[in-house]
Image (cartoon, rainbow, N blue to C red; front, side, top):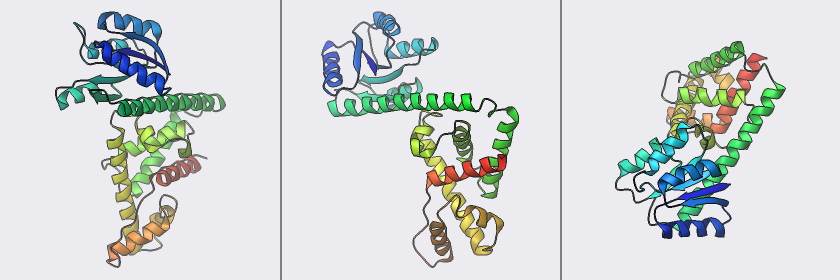
Length: 281
């Protein structure tokens, strides 16, 4: 991973260079204390990651980030600065910063964050290659008609589960479509990493989906209590959930147990992918 450091403080630059070198985090392709010259140097050196301060002389870090993004250059940014308030942190994320870190520089924190960004870059490259391979082997897989059929099948499942239109249902639709269209198996990627493809706040997106899936489990368990032979209960209680957890939730609803059932997000998402693919075949 190629890294560029832009900071008005030469001592901070030296600290960051030492952290990068000592921990084998990547190769330093450039450094600058001048924010005006720094923009040109960043474009010329084409780094994967820029570690940048918020404030410079005349030009600030946000202007640099905006200009880079305006040019359509794919570069990740970590902003390390003396943030005055939480609003400054929020602005950093709104501007597209991957992570915002308070000064003074903490070696362990910086090392951990750069490693996370490095992992995400490698993951994106892996996904890109998977997408290219999938498109080459399935050139007509994403036809308009197949896309419509896929969305319809997913929505039917969400409707049967009683969560269509609820918070998190649209996120589930996005993720399942992403997995199906790119032929991605959940063994190769985490839920949080998938969510990061759609939002700057993947944790919130994951939480919304988790709540929606939990509601679906409660609904399926309730159907089983009313009618053990219910079609929706029989179809989804074991394909989207662990049947033992459905039984536990049923006992909780009946008042027979204080323990609720739990969900497995990867099983749920994989189950919907399989159901949709089977319906398309």
